[in-house]
Length: 136
Image (cartoon, rainbow, N blue to C red):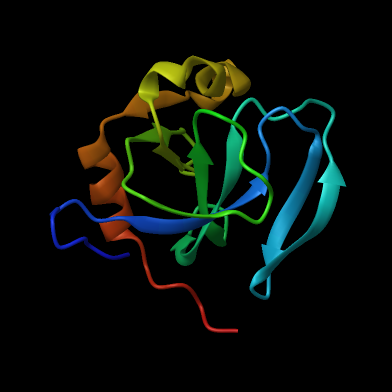
């Protein structure tokens, strides 16, 4: 996390692991992306993680999504959260980009996961509540 001198909104660095519109998924390991698997459906958004943050709900890096145009796998993105995709199981996703593009993201999750989009302040509060990642 960092803050810019002209803004008090924190930014977070993430990495794209799955490009919107594609089925080939990668995973971030050891500071680089590597092939993971091919999914049955293409991703409706750019999907990845915030490597410096840990989500205890799924014992992995915090998941992130970037709305808007497709971004290549491995792209590092520094941005301020625009929302939080809140899921009933606690495996929340930090959302970046224009929220008017969020419907495809919400539709991607089955109803039983209870996906709902929360405000940027909720994303920041959740991120600040997370524990430090475990050391290898």
